Length: 105
Image 1 (cartoon, rainbow, N blue to C red):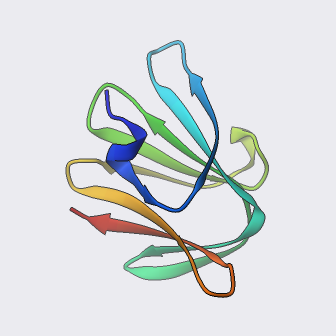
Image 2: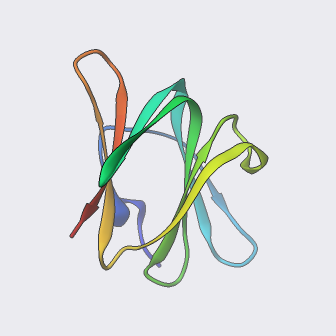
Image 3: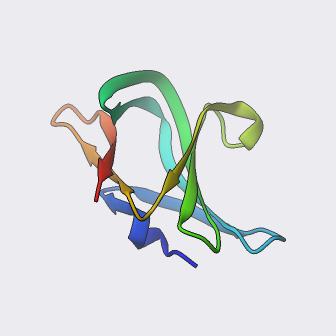
């Protein structure tokens, strides 16, 4: 199974870890209902993202969920990614705005 350090780099606050019945593991990263810019070839700006959920399983595939609130029903974006090819990097700008980059390995 992948480890969170295999797919997520940078400065972030891990809020919780949950084990799922199928063996997957959910990692909730707090964004404190602040704006988030997702960089994926171009910038996508979200006015409010409370949590970022990263779901890891038994393969190299992982999923990224941007949540308006702290539950999956409030999902505003979902991506399936392959850890062999990509990883996530969080960083804050000087003004405190959070950025999430999806980068090639």
